[in-house]
Image (cartoon, rainbow, N blue to C red; front, side, top):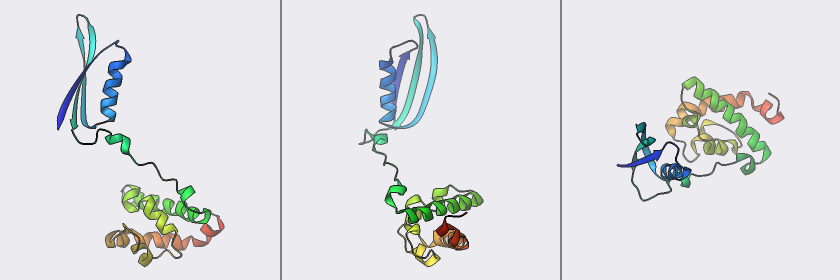
Length: 156
């Protein structure tokens, strides 16, 4: 863990501000403390930044792009995927967990491709283990089976 300090005059050009922003964008920042200091020659902002020094200076620039499942899946499979996302949201709300803790979008897209959504089929998908299948697989399967016809016809 390391520290870096920036001082920016209150009415300075944007160059110093851009240096600060560039540093924050390209490092894994743990904490930023700021303080406004008045002085005889005017005021300035003082920033103390705690960060992790690493080999990857473009830490935040390497984020993966979002997957567009509408383009990745055919229309019927995408419709199933969308319905599964609704079920996942309901399950997550009931269990007070984030939706991705139930199933990720990648996992749901694989579930949507199944000919029959059952606990046994869900268990075969990469990334879905025994515990997740026991906890959420059966519930998702039941919700899907109960609404199977409405999904195929596009009616609620």
